[in-house]
Image 1 (cartoon, helix red, strand yellow):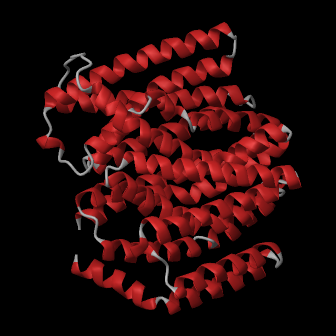
Image 2: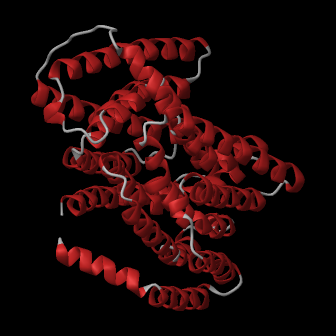
Amino acid sequence: MHLIKNIIRVAFANIMNFGSSFIVGFILPAYLSVPEYGLYKEYTLYLSFVYLFSFGFNDGIYIKYGGKNSDSIDKRVIHEEHSFLSVFQLIVFILMLSFSILIKDPILILFSISTLFMAITTYHQNFAQATGNFKLYSYANILKTIVNVLTILFAIFILKSRNYMDYVIMNIVTNLFVFILYEYVFIKEYGFRFKFNTTNKVSIFKIGIFVLIANMSMTFVGNIGSWIVNFGFPVANFAQYSFSTSMLNLILLIVNAVGLIFYNVISKNENEEMLKFTKRILLLLGIGGGLLFFVFKVIIQVFLTKYTPALSLLSITFISIPYIMVANVIITNLYKSRKNEKKYFRDVIGFAGTSFLFVGIVYLLTDSMTSIALATTFAYIFWYIYSTNVEYKYLKSSLKEYILLISHFIVFYITANIFSNYIGASVYLIYVVAVLFAFRNDLFKIVEYAKNK
């Protein structure tokens, strides 16, 4: 029951975050010009790599405390780690800010400020997730969502700004609020005690740096298309591509909720039968989530007509949802929970390098954003096949699951691109119902599990 409560908590927080992402994903691109929105998305693209600037310390904390109870941890050690990180990030901030001022780049100056707040916030988040304090994590995310929505609405309706820079500043205000919130809770829980020393900190960096680079590589795979389009196409094209990835990320908010919970669970006990069952449920949820594409399509065609070119890209990226779900919830957490950072590092670096090479070649041969999106989807499919057939063989898909995945690829692509929206949605809904009927035994297991708990 505790597991279900945690999933519901984090899922609810992420559903709230969905509202915030909806504003950024739909209202903001409608309000700003395409070039201004493209510049704003360029800033958020940089933000996706903020975690690099902890140089692995936050990741090391996540691995070190995975599956542990916070009450059993020495508070003196916690204070030392928190104090060390605060000083370390302040030094990083000063260096970043100095460089930004030197080259006179206002966006980098603002990015430097965001990095300071977000890096320390990530420390608190990682510690809370690793020790199973999802109540704090969820409440902080809900409050962050509220502040984010209010600041964006303030910029739209009070400032009436159509300048992307103002929305970057609103983002910084939100990050500052979350930083203060976590610091307040930390002091209330553990007291205020500044104790700086470097003892045993190198070992945390050593553990975390491999996980950091591996996580960066996974993020890089998801953003390969965005980076290539950003440098290889005009800003208006980049805005279209970024818009399609933003819509995909709305769906993945809920996926991340489940993924956060499962690291703590897997760290305590790697139950193969439970993970096999979870994998199948994730595939079914990912396929069912394809119905949201048709909802997004109506919204875009009616309210955001200037982004209709992104629909063809969105129809391709949505195909990758089942594979991303399994990768984020199970595969990544399995690597981390086994404390084999170097293995995780080697495999993910190989995956990122292969994906970049593949997507890059496709770009050079076709010079097409559609081909780039398709190549990225195939990269996720490759990672799914490799990880479930080579690394974690007990997760290998059955013939029935492979038929499911192949049929999903074909049916979704046809219904999303060839049929009209209403006919396509109806046909895909029939397909989803047929799939759920074929896998009804798995659904019954979920119902029984809920009753028993």
